[in-house]
Length: 266
Ligand SMILES: [Zn+2]
Image (tube, rainbow, N blue to C red; front, side):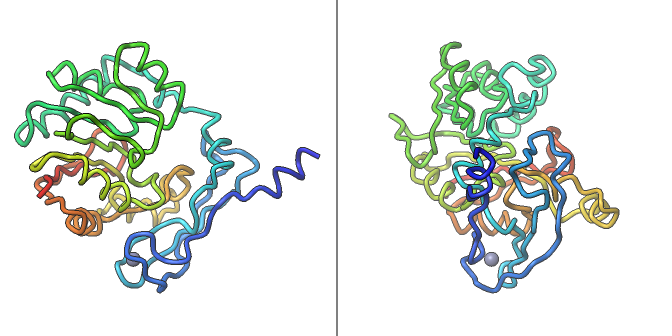
């Protein structure tokens, strides 16, 4: 009985058009295997079909998870996504992220979207920012609130902040969002002019990504929580479409093959 309920559950909502540019000229591309992913559940299809947009050349998975499927996936949390994970080691990585932002914004409200282990919030506060966190994992939000932080378990589009945001960080978050433009547009309306955005995610435009793909060992093709494989080029053009000027390219120390971009609200 229970099995029947699960098998009739809608897992992925298919994209009919490119989630970035809206073009219908999309075609099947690479296939990834997600069976070995720590968050994999047998109810979820074991493969991920990636799609290529013929117009803006973005790569995305063929569908994003339904609310029911997300509940299944979120019932497990990776150790490194839990508040307090490797506090001292993560503080050093977080400090390097903050120091990339400081030349553009040195004070004000810092919103960390998808704060995960909380390290960036703790460290931003230590640097003198008013740190606010948003995360979709309720346990994490409860822990942060108990520690005295302003924290929300909501979509950022549905939140109102009392003051304009000076800094927004999205470390390995945008590629988890079904329609990234919706979130960037919403952030644009909540940020102060010259506000600073720092974003990290895997970059498909480098030799390591290409090598891993050729060797059929690219871990991101089976990364269950990702909907997008951004190139540096497509991320930069998306930011510009949403009113943010990319200022600085760098690589991320958090995960393999990742880029870290600083952009400023125009
Ligand atoms: Zn497109």
